Length: 270
Image: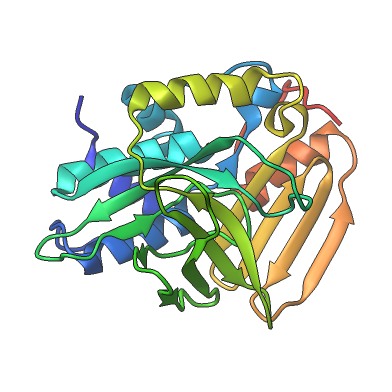
């Protein structure tokens, strides 16, 4: 199946020349980040989301829904491939928030992208549910820095004993670089993510199964809902936090503030 690009570009509010150039990669990446929310509602409601392209098109493109990394990045992979980009799928180990010495599994999906007439590959990722996520792709070059306003990122090599170089994405936290995730350039395939997706969506200790996580990046604002806690962070650093009330308020906020609409009888965990 090929994706309905007209519907996808309408969903993210993008128009432009459909060629596999760096400029198109940057602008589509940012438009996707601003256009489709991050959410893990399938796992918390008891199922693993489908990664089949028809299902992703129906959910993320044609419905008022979002998804988590495997959904977002599988969708963008299909878009970029149809536009003529060469895409290699990668998997990362999330390190932000990890305690010293913790070794987390590789569970995050991201992409290496080659653009037309460019020898330097790019790291693209529209599925990292964090304020430290990339708004635009970054050159896959050691010590590369990216000012993806209002955010700032860099790529470095992390200490590693394995045979492949370990890359680390970092974000500027106002005076220091905070690691986000680490990855090698070992290619992964779609069946690998089917296994990882199932584990993350169904394992009883998975954070994506136990707690609602919804995020929306908007011009001038990042909005995040974790459980019943709503946090809004403006580009100037101003933070407003509040606790939501009952199910009706949560469903209203999801629809009005995140663009995620669920049936009125949906029962979400506390």
